[in-house]
Amino acid sequence: MDSTQPARGSRLKFGLSLFTSDRGISPADAAKAAEDRGFDTFYVPEHTHIPVVRSSDHPATGDETLPDDRYLRTLDPWVALGTAAAVTTRIGLGTSVALPAAHDPIALAKTIATADHLCGGRIVFGVGYGWNLEELADHGVPANRRRTVLREYLEAMTALWTQEEAAYEGTYVQFGASWAWPKPIQQPRPPILVGAGGTEKNFAWIVRSADGWITTPIETNIDGGVEQLREMWREAGRAGEPQVVVLAKDPDRETLAHWADIGVTEVVYSLPDADTAEVRAFIERLGDRLALPR
Image (cartoon, rainbow, N blue to C red; front, side, top):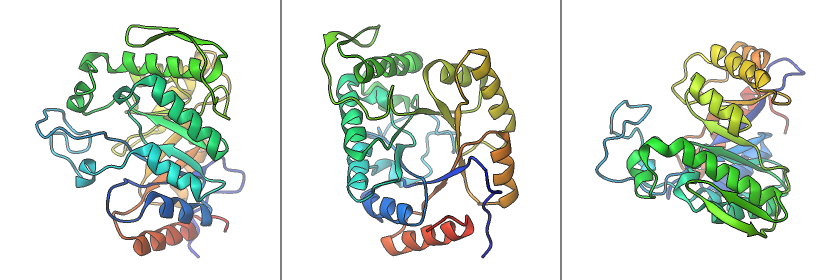
């Protein structure tokens, strides 16, 4: 076996990401296969819709073209993860990434708290600011206020998750003293990870409002970013270390060992756009290469 697992004692976890759509393997089948093969986490993305006329540049293509037609066919992430939760018991269930600004934050807080409650505390809340400005505009989000909207939404949702009588007063969300149960099993909240480029501005946002960083698929050298994030984290007086989730392509042993050394906590690999049998075979092969326990 060509094992690429780093040395024993590494903090690395391994996850899989399924770009869900109305074709190919279902989220439930993929999550069950991932759990059975020893993976730690399973992620799905979110787009509510894709406006036909757009000027927003996609981060990977550099213009308005899309790299994959599954953007047009993406399943609702919380319904998808709900089906995955029903057939699994251990694996973490996350979004990479969700778009909270596309939702009512009070209703979304209820959805996530319910999901975390019912799955036994396994939700990982990966979020993004939203690169598709036209998509967010249809939800009433001003393009130049995406970060503020997301920050307020997360603060308001955290209040609902943690306070017996929750209230919040912001520019984009306000509510008076309210009861809201269930609370998430994970307290004070499910981990919030931000999918964004490795910039000082993004790291400052993460340090203030989140629990970690998900790299973008186009990041080529994360060493400097991980070091900068960890330094800013300590300077801000945050406890522990930020979570760092790397979206990777190849399970190279030396690279994985290096990432573990610099503070990466998890590596996530994308599943192919294929039928159930092919994706299950891919998961088995990748699990073997990573020497994951069965």
